[in-house]
Every structure is written in C-alpha cells, then in structure tokens.
Image (cartoon, rainbow, N blue to C red; front, side):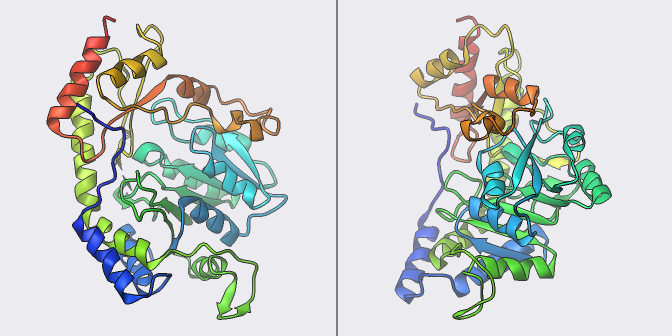
Length: 365
C-alpha cells in the first residue's frame, strides 16, 4: 500500500466550476467570490467573511484591521505554524510566545496571562490540528484586559467549541484553504467577523486601500481571492461536512486500535468538535524506536507520516534572540515527540487497519 500523509480531494464538480469561471472571462475577484464569502459566513454563523489569497494574508489583514502595529505586542502559541507569529512581525509588532497545554497542544491560558504587558494588544489562539483552543478562558482574559482575540482557524474548518463553529468564537477568525486543509480553494484564505467596522476596514486593506476604484484612502495590499479559487471553494464547502465526518471516523478508528502500541493518542477536550486536520500521536519516553526510526519504518511499509512541528516558533533563528525570555517547555517536548499519521478522508478502513497493524508490529522492534 501507499498511504500519503495528506491528499487533496478534487473532483469533476470542482473542475467544472473552474471551467465555468474561465469561460466567463471574469477570473479575478468578482461575483463568485462574493457568493463564496456569503456562503462561508453563513456556514460559520457570522455576519461577514472576507476572501483573501492565503491563510497568511488572512492573519496579516486581520491584525492590520485591528490596528496592530509598531510598539504593540501580540501573544501567540510557541507550538504552531510559523505564519501565526510572522504575521505579527509583518505588522511591525512583537510576538510573545505562550506555552501550550500538554494534552490538547493548544495555547495555555495560564501562560497567556503571565505574558500580558502594558503593550499587549491582542492574543492569537490556534485551533491546532483541528481542535479548538480553550476559547472561554482566553476570551475572559482578553475581555478583562481589553485585548483583541483572534482565532487562527487555518486547520479547523467546521470545528466547534460549545456548539459554535470556529470563525465565530473571537473578534476575528482566520482560515487557510491550502490544498491539504480540510477544504481547499487551491490557495486562499478567509477572515470572519461580526464587527461591521472591522469588515469594512478588511475589504479596504485587501484591495490596495481603495474605497472606490482609483481612490486610495489607506495603504493596502493585493490580497484578493480569485473567482477561480472561490468556484473551487463553493464546491468544497458543500463537501466539507462529509470530509470532516470521514476524518472523525478515521480518527476514532485509530483511537480504538492504537492503544497498546505504546503511542499516546490525541486527547479531545470536553465540549469541542475536533475535525482532525491532523491525527497527532506522541512517542513517549521509553518507546523502543526513535522518532526518525519510527517514521522510516512506516515509510518502508508505504505509510506517510510527518512532524508538525519539529521546531517551536520561539526557537526559530529569526525569533530566538528576540524571545530569549520565552520558556515553553511543553512546546519543546512536543516538538521532539509528535508524529502525524494519515487521517484524511481518502484513507479507507482497510488502510486504517494496515496502519494499525504496522504500528503494532513496530512495538517489539
């Protein structure tokens, strides 16, 4: 068998949708983007969704709309993808690195509270691997201190916290539609909000600061989504719940069959819907193989794996000197011990059984 760690699911409906846009000649941002924005806002349960050309653009535009800039600091988790922090730096602000919960891998509210300073303006919580962070606890901290809360929901399309969907849980929500995400537009992103003023500013910022054509009232960016990407997104949005249910099915299969292999399987917090962008296990101390040997052995059996993420962001060369006071031991431990196993919707029950058999076979290696 050959089982990849990720596999975009693009069918004939997506192909036909793009072909219709191409035949129309209206390739750039237009009515198809508007329809996708409206449908995505409805799906998330928010007033506004603003389409952009990447998840990083979504984060950057959201921070700019919240008027984050030089002299400000923004608290982000150390264990996340690099863009969560780099978007802060792109605004001229300073990321401060919070540690994460050892069970959920999400931002630790106690670590957030310890990092709040007079210059702190916002907190970005990441719904890592498809599981929402402890929004209630972080929201309370932000409300008490007058801070903006931003969801990095790049991996959490359709995830839920207390029966509310990701994208509706904070002042601003940021999504990515990269090919390996739970749904894709090829490349793209979305910012969600219930705040009319933030939405208006976002639409200005992503289109060169134009309040109307050739009238520029702000310095903005070319962050627009294309009609072609939105056409894919509309089809994918219709398929998203089916994709997520299959991811959850696959994760539950692994949950049932991996105990006894020595791996630590994912913990799911109460009151959330985890949509398993990744199924991430830990190799605990005393496991008979190193992580590299574990991954190599599975690769020999045709099973794809990955490490998300091998270096905490505060340990990256660009931030290491600036974050010398950041102590994030849980992030350090996770970076050294996690491995992602295939969980995407294309994985069949037969392949899941093969994965579990292969992992069990490594236990005595």
